[in-house]
Image 1 (cartoon, one colour):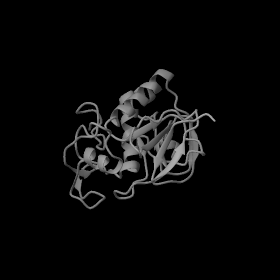
Image 2: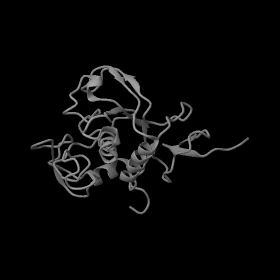
Image 3: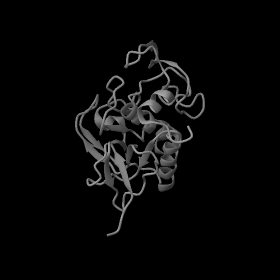
Length: 222
């Protein structure tokens, strides 16, 4: 019998079928984020209406750049970014980010929303689904950095329970690219959208880098 790669989670070993070959983490337990660019009809969710998001409309090269960017942002963490949905036979939890369309496709403002995800006050959301509206913004689906940052921002709400931050340059903030490419910054910062507030987990500040690492683990060497 031919053997396939396996992953052990909570002392249970799951075997990967050949089509599922994007698992790169060497740790015993990994967190998975699946990027769905194929379009999907969604029901009423955390803050949005039911609607249909079309497939991501950028080029193949732009999509590959976005995926590479998301993987780079998570490179220090025990997170695997997938572009194919894990088969049902592989019984693992994973967060899904649907990428495509406008915020108005699900009843939200195109001016105010680049994405939306379930956020449960610092708790991890297993098997959650986030939406990233790739057509929003002056350059829409051609803005690699913006789409990438929105994917990372929304997925981190789910897999790490991260809150919004008032830290320019942090991917959990709303300062776009004013301080360069957005990433998880290893520095304490107040939570909030436009004004300081207590973080969802009850703390006064958040270090997005350390908090995410405490939830999903760091890759070897970080």
